Length: 309
Ligand SMILES: Cc1cc2nc3c(=O)[nH]c(=O)nc-3n(C[C@H](O)[C@H](O)[C@H](O)COP(=O)(O)OP(=O)(O)OC[C@H]3O[C@@H](n4cnc5c(N)ncnc54)[C@H](O)[C@@H]3O)c2cc1C
Figure (spheres, rainbow, N blue to C red):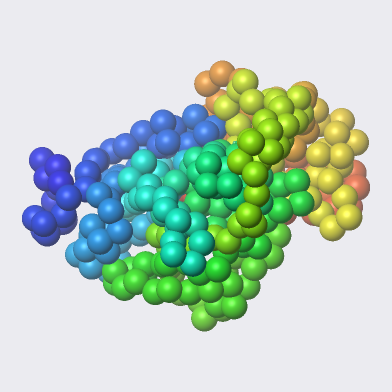
């Protein structure tokens, strides 16, 4: 562990990396937002467990994967961000055939691993630019598949550094939402996923087809966070936004994409405030014009004003 300027963490056995005053715009796909007081990137699950055991109980904690569904306000985050991408990265096939994937594994890597091992059903993960942890937290999905349909068990860690093995019955799982029935704060550190036997070459071809569909329909050349709003029952958020004439609407350098109305792109140096104001404007306009109150899919965290610690 880099202890150079660590003030509150005393455990010398920690093996991860602690950074202070971290510019979160480098860690979220919108490439905007404020500074986090601290960021800890654990070496592995055991190291994360030990870090949490040692953390003051009132320290705010935020878990980050690839930041592809996250807006961090310009005032930043008071507390510690736990960065799991790039570290909790183990992938293996278990004796019973399940795929064990740690929380920091990107969706594309999981899809390729499944194909390599002649399994089908993981193709949809290829186009979701998040980690296994983020996909579990969001029940991410597309093209008719959702993350939790593939889950047999998950491993979680709580604030006290305790590990639990849970299954889908422990959670209330819905469209882009997942909550522990018993409540409380826990984070995903790994999952066991079941896929059907398949032919690797066929699966790879399917992945290519799904990825090319995205290139045609999504503004992947500019920073964005995927769909901003959830689709309302029986309809599409993008259709409603377009119907209200909002395609191309800008606040600062934040813009409703001309290519996909449910995407907001950072067309230059957008601030998180520009993006949040545009989200609010789209929400209010759609409600006024269609009566539908869209629910936000992206998570918005952090302070409006600079954190003074
Ligand atoms: C171009 C583009 C296309 C996209 N397409 C899709 C799509 O087709 N379908 C879809 O569902 N989403 C899509 N998304 C959104 C996004 O990729 C998913 O929501 C993804 O699951 C987020 O994963 P992440 O690792 O980036 O999570 P982050 O953005 O880092 O975090 C998102 C939320 O999950 C929480 N979280 C992250 N890791 C953990 C963990 N280990 N334990 C507990 N909570 C955690 C965070 O605290 C935060 O609240 C897209 C995004 C982009 C930019």
